[in-house]
Image (cartoon, rainbow, N blue to C red; front, side, top):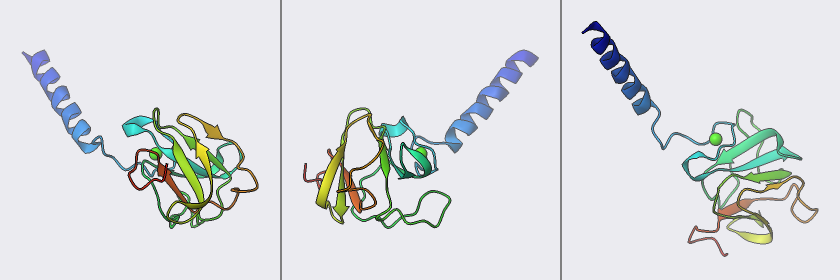
Length: 134
Ligand SMILES: [Ca+2]
C-alpha cells in the first residue's frame, strides 16, 4: 500500500514537471537544439563557435542579440547551423529576405560564410514559410 502511494506521488510529481516544461518552451536559450522542429543557429564566430542566437522561426529583420549578450546579430554572423531535420533555411544580406543570399541546408553547418554574406546577414527564412521567396 505504501509502495503504491509512493509510486502515485512520484507519478504526480513527474506530471507537474512535464507541465512546467511544455513542448512549446522558449527556443532562444543559447543552446542549438533539434527538438520542436529544429532550430537555426547563428554564430558570431566561425565553425559554429562562440556566442549564438538560436531560434525556431524565420526572422525578417535581425533585431536581436546573441544569447546572454548585448551584441547585435545584424551584420555580424559568421557561421550558421541548421538543425531542422527536413527544412532548408535561406539567409539574406538585407531585411525582408532580399539581397545576396545563401542556403543553410537541412542538417548542415556553414562553417564560414563567404565574403558575399559574412558579417552581412540581416534576415533568414525557413523554406516552408509562405513569405520565404524560395
Ligand atoms: Ca535553443
